[in-house]
Image 1 (tube, one colour):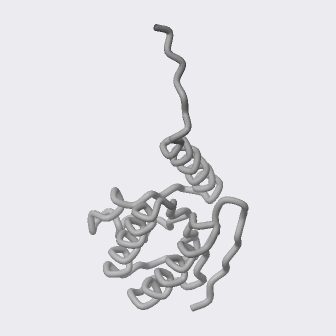
Image 2 (cartoon, helix red, strand yellow):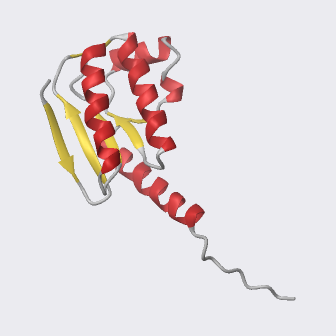
Amino acid sequence: MEVKIDTKEKFTVVTPFSPVLSANIAAELSETCSGRLQKEIKNVILNLSEIREMEEEAGRILAGLQQRFYESNASFVICSLQPAAEKNLDQWELLEMLNCTPTESEAWDIVQMEEIERELLDGDDIEFDRND
């Protein structure tokens, strides 16, 4: 499987170069992306702009991968889904389970918003002024 990995300040963009996302390729992508959870920059954007077809098991692997990221307090966003792959995910009732955006730029925005949200929720040192 040929894949491009581009690491940014807050996330890594993973782009597979294959017209079909089979279960085997999705499993390899899962390993590649899961490995990012051990790194300092954990958030992943999966750019599927090159994927024209998708097997149902591949969609299920992606849904499980996204869940693993959120359980690890990291973001996983899929972007640039092609119409046929999006239709497949919708038919298999997986699309609504996935965090998908039309463009990579919008995926960046989601990752950054989720980072801010995590920082705010983890902020144990926030003090509130009381006017008693």
